[in-house]
Length: 406
Ligand code: GLA
Image (cartoon, rainbow, N blue to C red; front, side):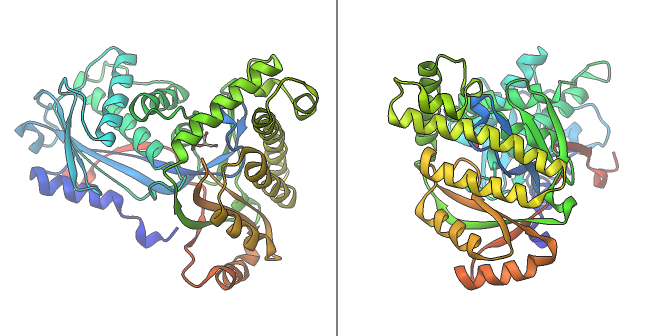
């Protein structure tokens, strides 16, 4: 996406200093993601293939007492954490004993509870500000970016608070799972672990191949390393239906697995799905999507590993068709963009990405064809079409704020 738009870090630092009259001392960040393929299969024990985006959510923290003004001073232990959501212009108190009222503050509090309970410690006495460059509500995992950046900041703060002898290291996948669980509790959406996993484990220039059953993962070259280009087209549609439909689809998959006599749809295949009696039509259609998508994603990851962009693009097309016809999580506006993109000769594949019901379309072309593709897409979809290039970025990280001199 547009490099000029990447300023959430500065927004968070500036807002922190304005509000508390002192610079924040610790900075942590984590990215959003775009899933290349492997949609709605993480909660079916399947394989997913997302990339971390360059767009990130940034958190800044400083101790809550006047000691925070002194670089390197031991932070004070004033109870509670005051958080400023810079982009929303809202602030909230968390870790105060009461459950916060706003959804974003509840989410932060649940992440804090999960991480602290896991380590058997408590956290208190901090000022925190955060801001994000990840577009909200478009299926690019803006909430996973918030959760993972915050969890990363917490681990840094715990080290400061409890001293160097305290071991705040948690296995990366465990961090992702703690964040996912916090999202379940705070938002009531029974999401899988894909978004948080890539926000933790993403690596520049690579996609994450994650087996959501064994939790084994590896990095495979992203299309940009193979002479390809991943483009995002924003449909502009944000459907509120997404979370209830998400839970419904997940329940249908679980019912289908039970009817097939397996623990999860990972243990079945399209042939058995077609030939086993006793599934309702929606169960059969959902199971057909999940089993075929798992197989496609394995093939797509192999295609990337062997540098075959055409084979990858073909899997992307089949993925979209399956999500549209069998899983029924696309929508007319997204289908229209996918169809228009596929009519452009330079396009190797195009599909919806994320939970569905709007959001972004992801398309693949060769780097050499990028400008032709962009021009043709604007021709087909209108000059104001929001188009951006997605490059695979880094997972979470934290740093000291060098402007404080600490
Ligand atoms: C959302 C969820 C993920 C995943 C995708 C669909 O982004 O958070 O866990 O299920 O939808 O692939």
